[in-house]
Image (cartoon, rainbow, N blue to C red; front, side, top):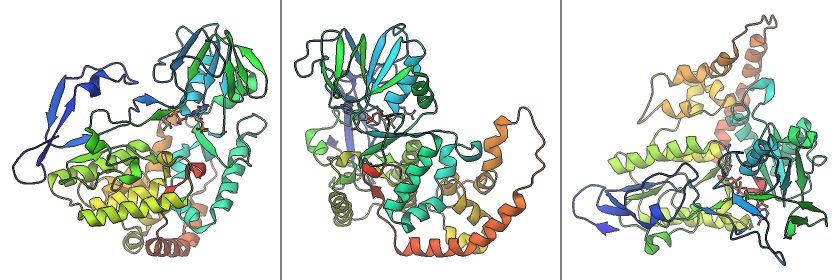
Length: 446
Ligand SMILES: NC(=O)C1=CN([C@@H]2O[C@H](COP(=O)(O)OP(=O)(O)OC[C@H]3O[C@@H](n4cnc5c(N)ncnc54)[C@H](OP(=O)(O)O)[C@@H]3O)[C@@H](O)[C@H]2O)C=CC1
């Protein structure tokens, strides 16, 4: 990092390159990086997760094992080419493990999927066939999470997940387990049901040609694919800067290292949101560019440090064993950053000025349009986009239009009218007593 003179926000120059580009392989096709490049202020994204997680892929050696024939990590995996007729063991049931198992099940002789914790599988297709995130990511649901004890919401979530298929019967998850993940995958349950993917417990050891599992069973394996996740690292930053943040919560609003002399470094995408990370990253970028351009300002360092230490204390209280993997509530976080950027919508005020819009915003999906109604980057089409999003989501399906005489619009109108007092109370309470936006990983999306 070099400091140059001048006025305004951009006083520091960041030299990025060399080891950053040569020392890592990205999950996307290899890109050419310049040997070194200098930028006036650096907005960096660690989301390519350069290093694979714990289960070292330095060989299939574990315990007393020798070696198995082939192994790969999800980082190297591209497609099912080369897996035809093989007996494959996929280790780890995250989104990568689910996706890769399903894809391999079409060509492999057998796919074994090894899990060490509970995983709830959710379909992208939710009530009435609408996308899951449209249905679940609403201010109304957010209000319910705020209002009701988390144990009750967890129970409701488990009940909902099990209503699709019983996760215990499929060997995926038990309502009793405190640590669990949620993944999105429509096909995995069918692959398990049809036997093309077989769930197995954690691997105890490998032998020459097989894997021995913790339940004492063993299977002959040709290829092992590690889908055990990634760790964040910033090899392109100097040690002195890297040491300023251990995890996203030691950054101001999960973005800015607070101790820097000038706000010239912003980390985009270092958040695990319960909703879309892309949408969250866009919101972060809007705020960051506002700060770089001088239209938004960061508070004094003492204030930022106080905010960070408050969040870290909340983290410590949660007793989460994996602090770095905290899930952050999507709507709380979006509203918080939107507020900093001056683009947060005032739903309660809208209830008086534009009740139709306010109710749609409260009960409908918290889509990015909601943050385009006011402030910098305001879009005149945002209101109409919010009001028409349900119909537009269905538009691509209308390739064969059928007559549906039942009219649900009047009952919906009545429902909205009855919900009006609830919205008022919700808005009031949420603005008075905001809930901490982090939730422990065990709580995941619930
Ligand atoms: N389609 C999409 O949108 C996709 C999104 N992604 C995203 O990319 C990110 C990375 O996902 P992913 O690669 O799946 O990684 P994750 O960290 O989400 O999952 C890793 C899995 O491996 C398990 N695991 C970790 N270490 C071990 C070990 N030593 N032994 C056995 N099991 C182990 C974990 O279990 P445990 O929980 O016990 O730690 C977990 O089940 C996530 O944010 C994910 O949502 C990834 C793929 C597709």
